Image (cartoon, rainbow, N blue to C red; front, side, top):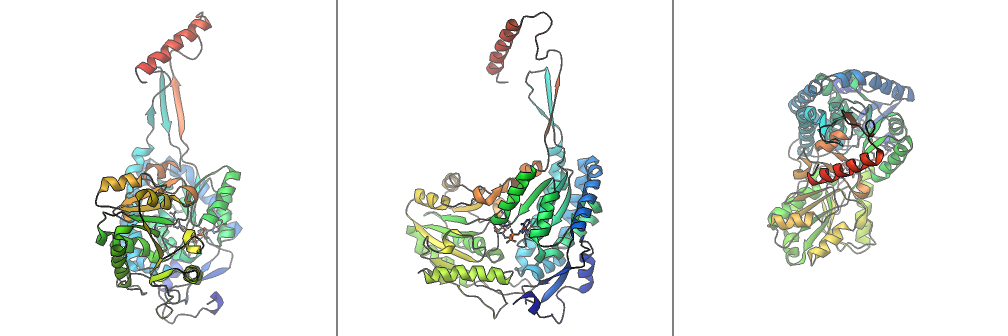
Length: 523
Ligand code: NAD
């Protein structure tokens, strides 16, 4: 259904006063609006005002003017706001989840999970950033004579461009690290999920972050997203590989930093000694959480041949038992896809696979009787390289099963991919699974878990290799990307030129002895 044909909903999903209050937070005075449909019923949820070029200029000017004062605060003071943000996110999780479900159609439990992730990220940087940002002493060229301090000044104004699939955590988890480091932020959330992003911003301001330290703009990626990339000092992008490639090219021309969290075609490996009940439950979560619209979810499942049938039986039964439905309540296991475009992409890939001979073991159908864009969790076998879903990211609830005979073969198949975001290995022997994990070309690997173990461990970096992106979020790495490390080296007494009347060859000989001595004492 096109946007102009969208029905008007009799009773609003979100109270109009809340909508009006949140939209006032967006820097958008063009007079144009963009109608957003809720995937729950394809009726108009909100008409979002759109930002003009002047709004972009104003948002960046405000953020740029505010940045020095924000950076001049002690890091601990900045971080107090992040800790308050953590508390506000948790205490408003119900209202946040309502907005997230209304905008994305996901299951409420998936919505609440992202509230938790955003809160945990705010707490991690709130607690850890002051220590990480403290000047660090490093070894100088000469012991005693050279003192080296490394400082971590902020980059400036960070542009955060985020997608619709995790509209709270993708919009805030990177930005809170940027704020902690002393940057200010101009955010461009996806057009579909502006209300969630605006509610997050309202809570951030209530937590003490100054108004101009985080501005928010709205509009199509091709215009407003590009405008953010043109004006930012660092761009932090989460979204598709195709868009990320274009952003990287422009960032390259402008010589600004870019962190890019992109797509994936993630593999899960079930080794012959795996606990099959646990692996099947892990596969259900890893393939169908957020209806598969999750960057770290699995679309390729490699299973050791001796346990293939036993695993498939468990996985198919658990998948068929899932409750595919929509609504704001807790009863939903798997929600709907977000849009007609997503539905067309997912059903197109499944039809293509079916037409070319793949077998559908579970699902494989759109369910317009449940919601306009609902699609069943789907398991395929017999997927071959000529099928679109063999290599292309589906970004939906569709997984292909492949048997393997040797670990060597499983590792090679898993690594035969241009992406490299997340993977999972299942075995009763965790040491063996970790050895397999170390051979996978992905930014994260979960052993006996799907994605939560790595994604929820905020002290460790997350990100992708190959076409899954550049740079890392989370952990110290996720903070330092928003800084410009500065080395301050103080030399005293002896310098780099021969003192007084010491001949140059004699000085060179003394330095040679010095270098040998430094190697001997491992300096
Ligand atoms: P998308 O690239 O179409 O859009 C993402 C964001 O970029 C939106 O805000 C959009 O408005 C903006 N945008 C679009 N064109 C732009 C341009 N030319 N310049 C600047 N900004 C532009 O992605 P999507 O379809 O909304 O999201 C799904 C994709 O995101 C999937 O491929 C998924 O794997 C990926 N993703 C990755 C991660 C990760 O952490 N690696 C997390 C979530 C989603």
